[in-house]
Length: 311
Image (cartoon, rainbow, N blue to C red; front, side):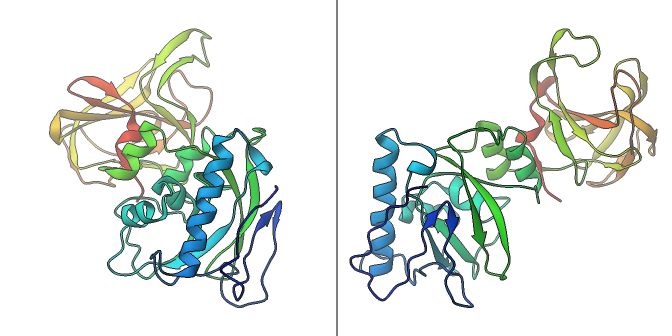
């Protein structure tokens, strides 16, 4: 990557630029210039703002990948800060700040947290998911995309990890709904989305059909949990869904759990959020162990990833 930053006002500050790899600073703290206050009168923040403007200009010119300038700064959030407020002050989408700092929900507290602020708008993805939000983001990640900028991120705890920046990309509608107003929990911890909501080729029949839910891969026998409080409306066996459970929730919503190897609850039983309903299996029309998960609202299938949140 060709990095470009302007530090004419920051002679005392060691600026860490990304040039394919991060150049580490010889310090116990984060090796990034630290912004003490988000004010234009502060020289570090003024420099950050200049770098953001420069990055946006390069994006507008049509440059991609390593040709784009990207640098990182550090900022400790105060008790008065919010993610939206920081994003607005920095002229960087909250999607970029949240994904780089692994903030899984708009409701997650950030006061006192040392944040890493990027100068380039985009999504910042890890190698391995640590939350349902990252699972959703990684489900559409193409590592062969030549617009991606990969680098090593140094973290406040002294560790480091690989990060992949997709410049100028924002949360899609599903991920944004999940991030801003989650109401259900993820029914399957540690799972991976292997098939999304919408049109797809049926893996068994090969026919093009509408997939009314999402598929979550996990080992057989993994506990499947209720995504929200409710009542068991139906349970049994179906040639397509295999062993299934349907829960009725408030707001005229229902959730369906299919291909279970076992069912642990009974008809008309009241359940809490997180109650074990059964275990992952491969019953019915299935090519391997996974959970088929649907949410219906007023009888209409909805994309489940717009409702669920992490445990």
